[in-house]
Image (cartoon, rainbow, N blue to C red; front, side, top):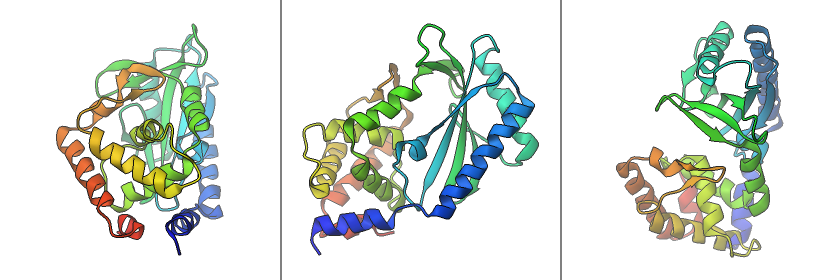
Length: 253
């Protein structure tokens, strides 16, 4: 089996099962009912995360549910905490993340509920509440989805997510996507091996020294969420992957 055949086999084995998909959709519907009954305001609800981007892997997957209220419903900070109160009615474990509330479903699956308020000046954008900095954060779900469509690097993103999970690499999926798009902008899509090698080289050479921002908002420096220690760990693990004997080593637990 050559490198390409092996990597395609890894991808096939990483596909989520139908039962995982069905469980996620049932949970989505339950969250929708909970929010509508306990907060109101008729927010628009959108699927996001790896589910919407089609970058799932079976071992670790998530659903981001974006809830977008009209600007006249209320202040995003108030809505952020109202969302927690609503979710607590049905779930005992609700964890605060930077801009979302996380509902753990299993060791490998969770849902992040992301409250936001629409930007009246540009309906493609909305404001989130950054609970770590006590600040508003402007971004665009549509822009994030279009980036995935534009670059069409889902396969190599899925392989790198599997590497991230199996080797405990402390990099967010969002930052990983950004770096993949930058690394592979002129690399052929016909070779998974070349794309993967190029991305690992790019990560190893740049993670400690470069800044990476949200494509929808250059003021949101995504790489600032990492400590220098975490960046060095990512760099080290990328170099370890580059020094492999064969591709299977980088996916071994």
